[in-house]
Image 1 (cartoon, rainbow, N blue to C red):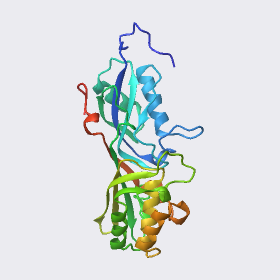
Image 2 (cartoon, rainbow, N blue to C red):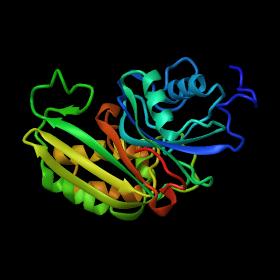
Image 3 (cartoon, rainbow, N blue to C red):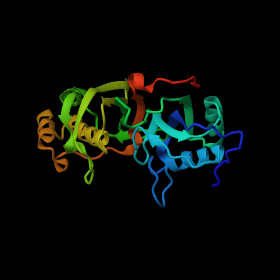
Image 4 (cartoon, rainbow, N blue to C red):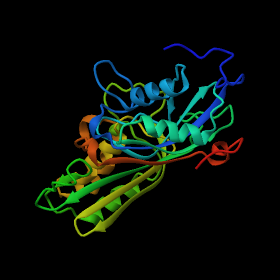
Length: 271
C-alpha cells in the first residue's frame, strides 16, 4: 500500500492519536489478534483504515478477545498523519467495515494515551441460558446450561474473588505474565430473565481465559458438582488443573474500559 505524499491535502504534518470505541460480533472471527491463516478483527479494521487513510496503520486494543467473544465497548487507538476529522473517520470507517463490526465513537486522544496500558479497569459480562432446551436464536451469544443452577453458592464464590487475589488457577496454560495477581473490583450475578443469568466482572486486568475459567468453575458449583469450600481451595492452590472447564467464548462480552481522566479528549471529537 503506497503512503500518501507530503503534498497530498489529506496528510497532517503532525502524527495524531485517534481513539475508537468498537462494537463487534465475534462469531465470524478467530479473535481480536492478527494470526496467520485465520481472519481476525484486528486484521479487518487495520486493512480498512489503510484503505481510507492511504497509509499503514497499527492498532492497539485494550485487550485481545478470544475467538467467538463479542464486544460492546472495545477501545483501540492508532496513530496516523491525517487531516480527516474524527467524524469523517467514524463515518468513513463504518462505510468500509463489514456489518458485524461497528465504530461507536471516534475522538482525538492525548499523545500519551494507549488503549491497553492507560486502562484502569475493564468490565466483562458472561451470559448463560439456563433451561432444558437450547435456543436457535441465542446459540452464538450465550452458553446453554441445561442443569438448573443454584444462585446462592455461585454468589458466594463471586464474593470470595473480590479484592486482590492471585488468579493463577484460572489462567490459561502457557501464558507468560509478570504477575498473576489482579484486583477484582466487582463480581456479581444477576438473573435478568427467568432463564437468563448474567455474570459481571470488573478488575484492573484479566489473565488469558480468566473470566471463562472462573465462570466455568463457578457454574460447576452452581450445579452442585463442587462446593464453595472447593472453590476456595482452588484459588489457594494456584493450579489450573484443579479448576473447572473453560466456559465457551460465545457467552462472553467486553462491555467497557475505564480510563479515568487519562481517557478524556485533548481536542474536540465525535461521539
